[in-house]
Structure formats: C-alpha cells, structure tokens
Image (tube, rainbow, N blue to C red; front, side):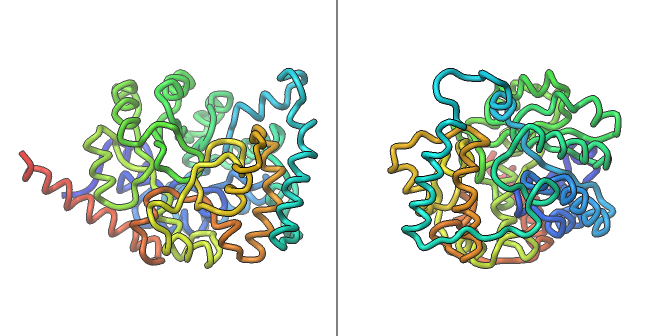
Length: 372
C-alpha cells in the first residue's frame, strides 16, 4: 500500500503531506528536506521582506528539484487598518504608546535588552509590524518568481489569484471555519487547509475533529481539503483521511527537526513540553495563536489590556520576543507550537520524520479493515 491521494496530483508530490508554513521555522533547508522526502515543503515567509524572500526561494530551488511552496499572511485587519477612519474611537495607533510602555516595563522587570536585528528592515526581516505595503511587496516577489505553490496562511488570496494562476502557481488557503472556505472557493483557490484549534500559531476556535468533516462536506469535492491541527504522526494523518481529508498539513512535529529554523533552546522546549504546555493568546500578534506558555503571554493576560489588532500588537510584542530569543529565554520566547508536542520526544532529520509518518499512516490505514 502506498500513501497517495488526488491532492498529490494537484501539487505534484509523492505523499499527501505538506509542511506547514511556520514563520521563521520553515526555512529553505526544512522545506527542501520535506520536498525531497516526497511531501510538499513550504517556506514560512511571513516575516521575510522582499529581498530575503527572493533569497529563500533561490536557496530552496538550489536544494530541491521538487515542488515547494511559499506561505505568507494576508490578514484583512491590516487592510482595514490602512484605511483612514477605519474605526471609531481611539485608533490602535493612538493607544500604541500605552502598550509599548507596558512592554518596556515588562522587559525591565525581566532584565531584557532590545537587541539589534541584523538583516532587518524592508528587504530582510520585518522590523516592527506588518503593513499592507509589506504584504504587497512580498506578493510581487511570489508572483515574479513563479513559485510552484502559494499558501495564504491567513486571509483570502483572491486579489492575487489570477496573476498566480497565470504563472501556473497552485494556490492554497488556510481556513478555520466553513464560512472562510466559502470565501476561498469563490476566490478560486486550488486546495483548502482546514486548521483546527489544536494547531500551533494562528488557529481556529473550532476543534480539529469537528472542523475537518464540516469543511469537507461543504467543499463537496470541488477542491482537495488538507487537515491541520494536532496532527503529528501517521495515526493523525490516517484519522484525518477517515474524516474525508485528502492529506495533512503538519507543523509542530517538524519544529523538532535538525533543519527547522529555531534556536536549540526552543527545540529543547518542544521536546520537554507536554500536551498541557501551550496556551492560545493574542499577546504576540493580536490574533489568537497557540504558543508554548510563557511569561509574556501570562503577564499580558493579567494586565487588563485588550490586545491591539494586527499589525499593532506585533509592534508591542516584537522587542520582547526578539530580546527573549537573543538571550535564549525559554520562559519568554519559547515559540509557537500545537498541542501535539506531547508526542515529540527527540530532534530528528526531517527526512526521518517524513518516513516515519508515511510508514505509520500506511500501516494504520491498511489495518482499518480489522475494525469492521
């Protein structure tokens, strides 16, 4: 038995497994390793300015001749924030100084100093918050480079889809509700990723087991659906396929790989964590995101401050996260991760992780007949 579904033909891959486009963690090395192992490697390029994004694409192409993808964010909240008079009352920009004062006091209390970020700015890593201009510059690179696959990790790729399709780019969108699937189908996406509440990073309020079959039923075979959220081994892939998914979008399991773009202390935090070690918080980006529990998320929750919308909350949290990373503070900046991390016990090469997931999924699916 070979693990293969129709989404493999759509994406040009051997196995129906895609690497989640985890910002900063899904590097060219990791994406290429997953693609070379038969899956779809996807660059987590959310924080990449145009020059760095192009360099990442070039690096990935030099490391694999297989299809790969680029994942960025297209949040509607940023488009709204860029319009004058988008909301009544004090604007997020008006409230920014108060929140930055809180972050500064937190950093003083924790002995954190804001580091200089090499390669930051418009062309490299973003400094401060996201903006509509930043997203537009990213998408111009994605289009000009004619990447095989583009994934909108957040938001609707509709405004770019005609240009992407003209290049032969397969377009994916990560969604967290049936209404999001409806919008993406109207926009013309080729693959939908239904990501539930179990997932690391930005996720849905709906549990993965409940979300997948509802999205599958709504889509009704018009495009393939990949399942995401709490899937970290072959059993999870098999379960998702039993719910009607054509495969899986897997993130957290690939964080604990040699190629993942995380600091060693962050990989250690994942290996040592349990299923209870994460929390959903708006403290980092302004949108609900699951991350390993840390002092910043806890302090912000106790502060009484309402999280600012994206991109303003990241302007507040950015210096805190950067300082925690620079000083290897597992208690401040351990990173995003899903509830599946309790199953992760070691750091391996990505090719071994892929091989284990595929072999286990094939074994479980082959034995499904034992239950009937």
